[in-house]
Length: 217
Image 1 (cartoon, helix red, strand yellow):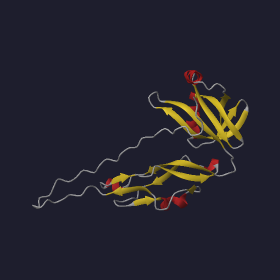
Image 2 (cartoon, one colour):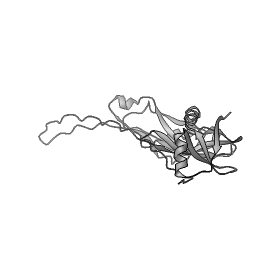
Image 3 (cartoon, one colour):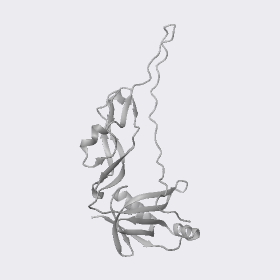
Image 4 (cartoon, one colour):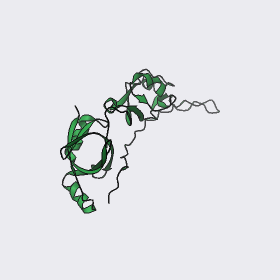
């Protein structure tokens, strides 16, 4: 059973009205999609955050708009990084019996044997596009890297048959690899240089999605 989220329609699109709406603890948004006209809405910010934490980024939400319920997924959102606030949300109404595309994050699990030996982990692919019915879309795709040795690579082909969803990526796309540490080099005199130190794995930043379905002034 989908988690329910209350929403109200709105008809004042002035900047001052949107500012007041946010100051009162609400988030402006829009719902569109399956059997649904583009409908401007407002939702309680705290309730929205609790709902997404509960169902996940790709979870099904029963959006109750003035008593009219519709199954939706969170399609897009805008965020003010300075204030750490969600400023706008887009909901996509879905047909539960029809497949859809969604982006799912990749979560690496386990500690690589190669990293334990001094190798450096690189993850060039952090999310993957999948096709599945809305209720079958996972919150994440887990990839076990515990058996990877230095020089090993895990690709889409290695995990394709492990999930019931369709992975919309080429088989040879690299998910993660273990690189060898920087090798020692000998100078012309035969003197050996000091061993290099493996570079730390770089982190990644999550960029807020830009609003794609509505533009409000």
